Image (cartoon, rainbow, N blue to C red):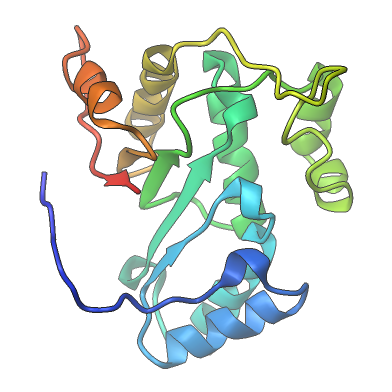
Length: 199
C-alpha cells in the first residue's frame, strides 16, 4: 500500500456540484489538459456525463481507455452483499465502461436498501437517471436516515468478488476511520487489501 503526503494543491474539478451539461465539457477539457484520473460516485449523479466526456475523447483518439484511471463509489443503500454487483454494473452502464480501475465503499455505514423494484429498474437506468436521489437517503418519519444492518465486512466480500469477475481492477474504501480500517485489514479470509482509503 502506497501513501503519498504532499502540501501541493491537488487539481480540483468540482464536478459533484456542476450544472447538468457542464460535466461532459469539463471532462473533455480535463483530458485535453492532461488529466487521466477521474473520481466519480453514484451519489454525485454525474457518472453518465463523465462517461460521455470520456467516450468523446476516446472516439477522437485523444486518449485510450487504458491510459485513464476511472474510480467510482458504492453508495450506502447498496451495502447488502446481493446489491454490490448490481450497483457496480449500474455505474459501469452509466459510464459506458467495461471495467473500473477502482471501486470504493463510499462510507463505512450502510443505509436501508432501496425497494427491489427500484433496483430492477436501475438495470435499465431509466428510473435512476430521471429520478436522481429518490432513494439515496431513506428517511424514517422523523427524517432520520434508516441504517442498514449489513456489516461493511460483508460488503467487502462482495467487493472482492468484483475483482475476481473482472468488473473492477482494484477496490478500496472511503471515509473509514483508523479502527474501521484496522478491522477490515484484520478480517479473517481477506482476499484483497484495500488499495486506498480516500478521505
